Length: 162
Image (cartoon, rainbow, N blue to C red; front, side, top):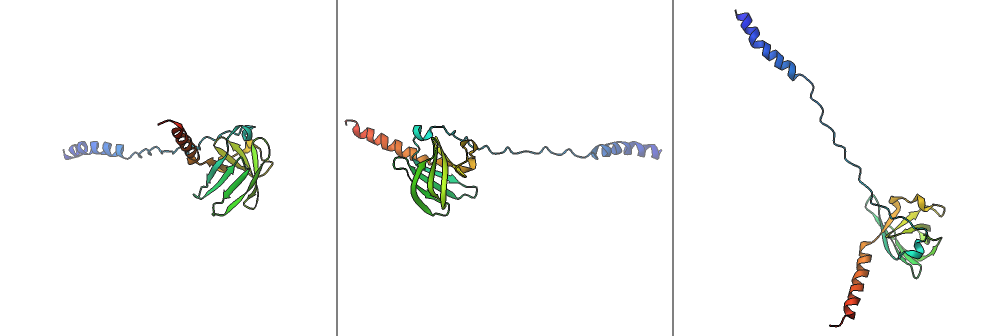
């Protein structure tokens, strides 16, 4: 009589043990979305005639270093500050309706395509504006526009009668 009682007690335990031996399902992996690059302003064919491109443009590299290029459109002069802090001044010339060439960009001529709020470094004179890359985009410094707006509002305030 003991034998049937033992089987009755052990049978449910055997069933529970068999259910518990299944391999656990792996947790779903979370895949991080690739960071989106900001929109790249287009380069109009006549940007040198239609855009106000004077100002300071900055490129921040992957390692955090920064280079800047300041353009004075009226005098066709520029100031370039390399990531290592070396400063170069000179003049730039218009290559065509949307590209300029600075005379000394790290020891050689530098070519840039001009867009609204950005300029794009081009590896050489033959590079088309269709080949611009985000990694070569110098962005117009945000405070350039703020300074101009502040100057304009102070001039308007000075013109108002008290």
